[in-house]
Length: 116
Length: 118
Image (cartoon, rainbow over all chains, first blue to last red):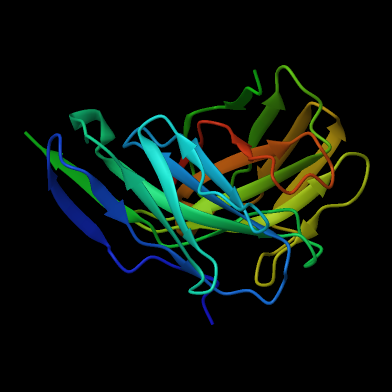
């Protein structure tokens, strides 16, 4: 079973609108962290935001916020007031603490295109 | 802070030759480094995890004799693609983490290496 599921392969959004990128995850580990990364066409991975499994409040970083619904195992990324420069691939990722692995497991990504 | 430098950014090599990719943490000590592979329009797949001074742990399906990983110091890890074939053409990207056991610390990524084998 996939550990990270991103159901939107591609999205077109009008500039200045808010956009929600979906992410659901699967784990039996009570301790885990959820991450969102942005990958522009140049290829680098840019860290956006983090949510811990024990965090009571949704994470926010500037225009980025994470809608964390633990019972539903979802961690959607919300980008407010989208900009042309937000066009990129967006990956949701998870690290499970008890699994013994340090690395991140990534979803398949969502290709976001902001239109003027 | 937390800069990871990866070199080269692009490399073209002939089939049968070997290619070395370097990953350096510039302003922190990376106790653990990770190597990922990404095919066009696909996700990042973890190839191996390396801890300084010990052998790398490879993911299932990754040939350890083909993808040699060395993590000789706290700031440098190398991936050598041996006897490269066209199917090895891909985007390879490294990442590093400095705090062992801190599951809320993000991985810092290099800018990736686009390998083309002709």
